[in-house]
Length: 127
Image (cartoon, rainbow, N blue to C red; front, side, top):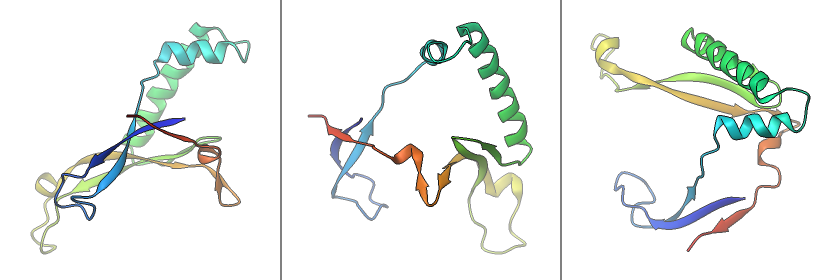
């Protein structure tokens, strides 16, 4: 269940400025909790899971930083996209000035147009 609060949008550059919008409220799940949960559904120990998660993190970093799209079955595709400050002309564009950084994009896996991650999502308003 996704918890949310309702807030007035304060960012004047957004189309929803001055209107009320839902904002998700998140709890953080630690590696240790994931390790314990996985241990209960397979023969891997928490140490095994930690080893695999560490190796996965290293492999993801390597491939993403080399411009690859990483496809993980059951999860989806991960890729890094550029964050830009636009230039008025091609001649004015300089990577050191116009490329501000990167952001991680996750495209959930879908089958027949359905994304498993979204099936059954429920919402709960927090007061």
